[in-house]
Image (cartoon, rainbow, N blue to C red; front, side, top):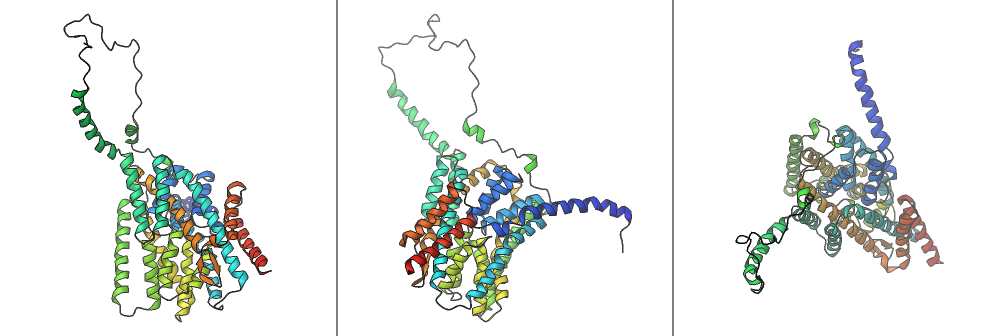
Length: 497
């Protein structure tokens, strides 16, 4: 049944507008999934160059807001940020399309590698270990460079500088599931107290009281008698009026900061049904209900199927991981290695390979899911898909619901204060990720569970080379990582000779 010509003419402009918008989304997102090497810190830098500096889809302040939100919420940090940028520009369909373009290339590659790893011997050839260690060493330098560049934007004063330092060092000293979100919340609370002058108000009352108590003891000597202006009107006034009017005082910092943020109309969130605070709240509530049901079944069922346990573990990991890809590594180690599904050697091989693959680090779950299913006699493809959906779904659902609520809150002063601290705390945790990858990056047949890169100066040289090359010579992340792999092979050739 064909449409009447009048209806077709009325729909034609909408179809053309939809086509132009779809082409724009595809044009600016198609290549990210095949060029996004280096992990989340590098991804954030790449998104800033693409969507703030070149296309101006969002401004600097919106970018910092989305960066803070992506770190405050659980799930993959860079994936959530890309999802939100496209959600603002094109709606839910554009956001989901950008996610698929971003995640699928790396996920397919990791699945293919898992099929190869599942059929290799217990020990790999020496050059392979050298190659993997070189990849890890170069990745550490790339992430360190991205952390330094992100710090330049996150540090706005001495307080945020201290937060970056303290969260980074605190993350190195201790590691637990609840620890990273607590550090980020503490960072947001610190800037909230400082920006809203809560501490100033609490200290102001005792200071004023102390001054009142000191007044009787700080009176002037009796030998200096001041003129009584009430009795002697001819006495000179101690403070004669100035012939020139005093200039008006500029508002104090606390007064200026109390003003709400004025958001430009060009950067308002679109008023669509999927981005209202009611819809956002409903999405968050439904997610919490599904989360409780999934975990309850995981605990109640006497012998749940392997694929369901895999999905439940990945769904739980995607819900409680804060800080993005670097934080997911130690947690997934507990969820698959401790369960006996994946060997420590295969886990570290996948860890090295994910550094050399584009896209989100959460694609590591595809590799682990495929090996888990293969070891349990199930379909490798089914395990890969189950793990992929399980680990990505929580973060994307939560950030979509939060964006609906965010439109009504983003101009408030206390929200800006919290995000300023959370932003600095998230950058500090990137330095923690650098340290943790550095501690397990050296792989060899004698220590397949990983060892510190500092045990051999050559790996430190590779790390420094990737950092200096990117910082001062414009070497991009893919080239730096491939250069690290080549330097690892050079080391093997020299040592074996």
